[in-house]
Image (cartoon, rainbow over the protein chains, first blue to last red):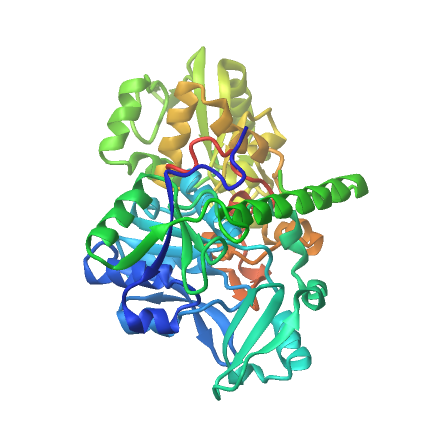
Length: 285
Length: 234
C-alpha cells in the first residue's frame, strides 16, 4: 500500500535557529533557512522565491542574497508561477545550482520537466534543491483579495502576513493590530477550481517537503524524501541552522493530522476527478 | 525532410553522451552526420546523386516536415516507414509541422512547394518528440529509453503523436478553458519563442509569436502527468 504522504527517508519537526529568519518566516522558517544556508555556503548559487509585490501579490523572483530571500518570506495564498523563471535562472542568470520552492503541483511540473526536458536545454543538471510546501488548494489573486478586503476589511497593501490554520484564515495588518480572521468555510467559494483535480498534499516528489501541519506553533514538519534532500538536510543540521525535535507521531495535532489532511484532500479530489470524467470533461492523465 | 537540421545538431551536441548512443547503435543513415549512403555517378552529360535508404532499420529519427509537393520527399518517407520498425518524428517540424506550417510557398529555389505537413499526416509515426529543437538531454534520454525498451518512459512521446496541431491555442482550449490550469508557469518557461507570459498566475499567449512547436503542450502537467516511477530521484 502506498504511503498517504508519499515516500520518505525521514520526518522531523524543526525550526530555524536564526532569530531574524524565525521572526519573518511563516512557521519554522525551514525554506528560508535552507535557502540562506545554501546561498551562504555555496550549495546553491541562486534560489527561486515567491516575492511580494505591491498589494501583497506574489511574483516569482530569482534571489541571490540573504536580504532578497528574507524579503520574500511568508505564504501569500495566491498563484505564483515559480516554474516560469526556472529557465531564466539557468540561462540569463547563469546559475548552476538553483534552489526551487513550490507547491506540490509545481513540483510535479518541475519533475516532469526534468524527466522530459524537451524545451529545457541544459537546465536539469543545474537544479540544486527542490523544496515542496504542503498545499490544500490555492486562490486566484482576486479571490484572496476579495477575502482580505471584503471579508477581513484589510486593504491588500496593508497586509503583513496571511496564514491558514485552526479552521481560519488569519490576516495580520502591517500596523501591528490584531489579526482579523475569516472562517475557512467562507473561503471555499474562492478556491481555484483547478486545484480540485490535484492528488498531492505533501509535495510527494520534492527533495524536501515542509509545512506547519503536524508540528507545534512556530515549528514545521520536515519530510526528507530522497538522497539530495537528505544530503542537504544533514549539512544544515551539522551547521546548526535548524533546531529539531522528534515529530509527534501520537497526538491528534501531530503526524496523524498530516496524514488525515492528505487523505482528505485525496478523497475529496478523487471524487471531483470522477465527477469530471462522468461529465466528459478532461482530467490530467 | 523539410527542416533546418537543428534537431540533428541538437542530437550531435551531446558531447561525450553521443558516444554512449553511438556505441549502442549502428548509425546506417544520417546524411548530416555520417554519409555512407550517397552514391555519385558521373556520366558524360550529368552527375547522378543517389541515396539508398537501407532495409530493416530498428529506429528511424525523422527530422523536418513532409513537403507534399515534393514527390521525392513523399516517396522517401514511405520507404522509411516500410523499412523501419520504429519511426520517430524528431522535433517540432516533424511532430507538429512547427514553423513550416507557416509556409506560403513561392520561395526559391522551389517556388511551387507550398504544403508542409507533420510526418504523422503521411505515414504512421510511433513517437513524436517535440521541441524546436528538442534539447540534447531529451533526445539522449529518448534514444536510451528506446534502446532499453522502457515503454513507461516512452508513453509520453507515443501519446504526443496525436497532438499534430499542438500550439499555444491548445493550451487555452485544453487547459485554461477546462479549468485545469493552476498557474505553475511551466509553459512560459518552456516556450522557446517567449510567446507566453504569466499574468495573475495564468498564461497569456501571444499567438502571433507561436510557431506551433508543441513544447508547452508536452510540458503542461495538467494535460498529461508524468509516470511516477523514478520521478522522485530525477
